Length: 324
Image (cartoon, rainbow, N blue to C red; front, side, top):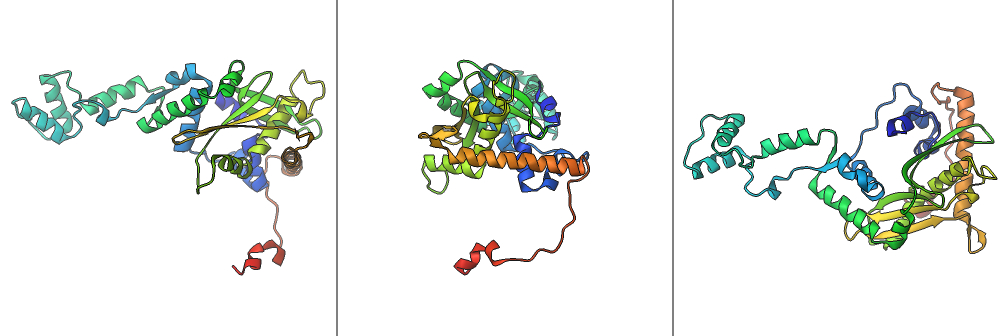
């Protein structure tokens, strides 16, 4: 299934649950609204997609992505009108006219193979029309991040068998809510999701990764994907997420030195119930119930309820305790 078909399929996904957790109306606006605006792709999203391709589908990378041309990396490249005139002067003739296209044509007539950036750029754009172009710096970062992942023996071991960008669909057995997930990597023994991170505020790498898991809600995604996997055909006890293959978060630092961390969320830790797993389970169940309630109440109409006056209470403002 291609990406567009997956995203158009009506079902509750991890990304959609994030909006639902903010508010039901936000969920409706971005996911059910027939006039919903397209979500623009950011440079970070483009970088992440390219890294996923290079790390998880390396044989597809050069078919989908290409580096942008950089004149500074091309010996003797003529970029500006001044460059063209200087080159002509050094070769004993004067250029006529002021239009850049005219000057380029005269230089090419004199020496067809001289590197002119406008000409190279047009040719490059034609050759890579079907590809996503990355700036040279981002291209280098993608290659470096992927290489860092490949240097980790455990990561390469997990990549020996499985499939990238694997879509899975299921129906919640209790409430009948349609669910979906697009696994970065899925095999019989593991589900893996690739994440990038940036070290911040002097925190250690391990603390930075832990903060990302908590504040970005990656632990919720880990449980949700495990739950969907447990509902696939072949499981003896459908819906028991603890029986699904382990969910691994593979983190790679987006800047040098591209440190790597691998984290796995399990239902038990040290023989005891893992409270992070249990918290994720309760949050996922709560969001699925919330979805079911609003779908039954509003259907495809805006998920918006009338609001009444609400009193402000001290306990809602912990800042008061600090005199802020």
